[in-house]
Image (cartoon, rainbow over all chains, first blue to last red; front, side):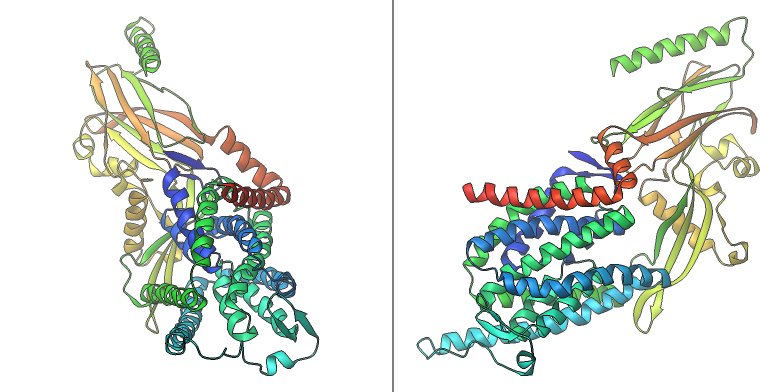
Length: 307
Length: 249
């Protein structure tokens, strides 16, 4: 059944769109990522114009992260204090990012730069996470009855001034690190047209030392607010948010998120991190191949002006 | 469907009457079953019927053209091992949509000069660069433009069939895809005899959004800030509602 999307200006099959939303929602619920890094390219593949795909993706990510945040909140896995501090930087970063994106686009060649940034970022993060989670899995099987390992390493990042207690995360650290992380992730998220959970979850685990169980819910809270900010800015500046498309994606996405959260609750921390690492490496490999392989069609069209 | 064929037969009867009546003298009369393509929520492409009559025997060619656009064609090249956009050519006046139908194969209907003059066939479209200085090796860019437009169904690759009912009445179905751009289209009907155009008629066709999709589009453009807020609220409520529903289930 075809349905016409008024802003994207084309018709798509109802079940394809809701199914896409469901698949992305599943990942979102299980791993605490927005799923924009998958959704945006897939929408473009279906024929949706790139600006509409990016902006509508933000709207869909908003909805799935609301239900994802609620699902994790009910399980007591959202650190609102940490989320608030991260967002202090995140809102500034994402607004700067939307602005920087349009500047870069004016200069040209933004697409390969963005792809390259993705490849570097995802392969570094994915590689580190995979190694760490494998080590954790081996340690668990070796010492099932050993004494409890230290929760996290303390280093200079945590010793900076302005210390605050984050009860949910069982941390007493400086707010400077989370504010800067929030800002950088927000900036990258807006530049790359994603929610940013991909970068945020590893940063929370490895840089801040938060327990994995809390990072997923807290990351979803952060994504929720950043996605709301990006949705509004895109709709206001570019009129590129398609609410009909977003609505269809959300119907599938909400169902997917709940199933994902259920799956996530049954996996151990290192398993979640290992799977997320594999996903990151897979996407990074795909983007890298797209950059270096001879394209099937080196030409592309863009309408500059219409009567 | 029955209503359409009924109105068509009435229209044809009128045409026959006019064509054979004493007031006749117009070599070519044609009209569309509808002058408006309304893009509604359920829009999945549509068909508009073109019908008409000619005074004396000849070939009929129908050209459908969408609004003109400036379209840029970019070509990727290798740069430090990576494939990036390295060259581009912008073409002026590229029709957003283009289709042609003919009573006989185009090369039998008119010689190359006439086909070029009236732009009969995708291969005869005049596609010139915005910047005349860029007119070096644009052949490959031109070919890529046509090929990609055909792949997205906005240039119809096949020449449609204009069929005759008897010797004077003709009809041809005009098919429009679901990704049809909005705007003012023109449908040009040409009557050719001996390879020359002896009569022509142009009929306008408007393609516009209608109903819910038109309201959403207008709202998004006229009240952008309010639309943005609404999108945020809708997203939040939908996510919350979904979460609550699934918790019950």
